[in-house]
Length: 87
Image 1 (cartoon, one colour):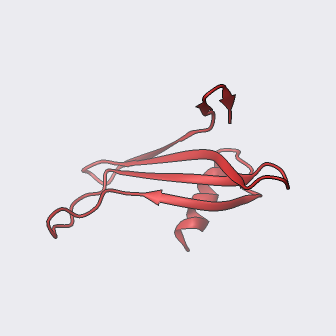
Image 2 (tube, rainbow, N blue to C red):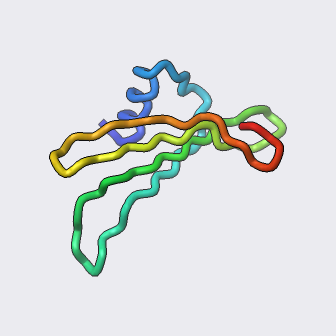
């Protein structure tokens, strides 16, 4: 199963409609001086098309937080304010 498929399942389990998602960007913690460590935070930025006239807009941000004991939790952020516009 791909990362995208797992992300879709997580969102569907939480009641989000993932249809229309056009692009997903993932930001993670890089290795440091060649050492691979734990990756405590992964941030997924999901973009979906709002209208046919415009390109995709940021729709939701998913935060995946991992602990030292292999426990983790996932939370979503869906309302954004840029200037005076809500997304």
